[in-house]
Image (tube, rainbow, N blue to C red; front, side, top):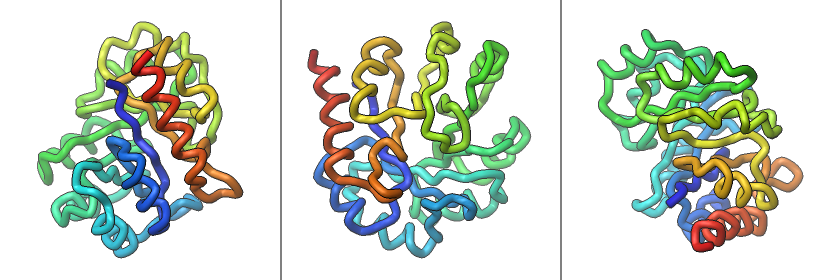
Length: 202
């Protein structure tokens, strides 16, 4: 089964929609420059509303590992996603502080990027076109990736079924593709989840 991650949730109504749709993961963005940024305090309030069966992923960009580990320890998030320039030394440091799962994001632009993906010691990798650009990259570049990965970058309710059918990723990750006017759109969220599950049942 392809896991579903709805990222960039920031309002109580977003969590209510997620609880109805029951994705595997939701994402809180802790990068201050992002328009989807939430504070740890906001994330705590939202996490308390979230069904326990849905895991909360914290998205970070070059954050101090101590701060990441603290959010994991306090159970505000269940998984850490590294979306900046974090390297293997950073992951090793975070491993010293927590044994919770780590997702490392990679921007896929050339075949050389695939080599780095395979070598990552993170629990999971996420393949994206950029830092929240909302555009699709060339999926042919990842046809030889052997490890499980989350596919991100430009996914929406209209193309995610094709992504699942042709690439069979471990999971799919969406943010801007389920928004209207920069805010999460419950109708688009539902359409995205339905498209994945319909393809899974095909």
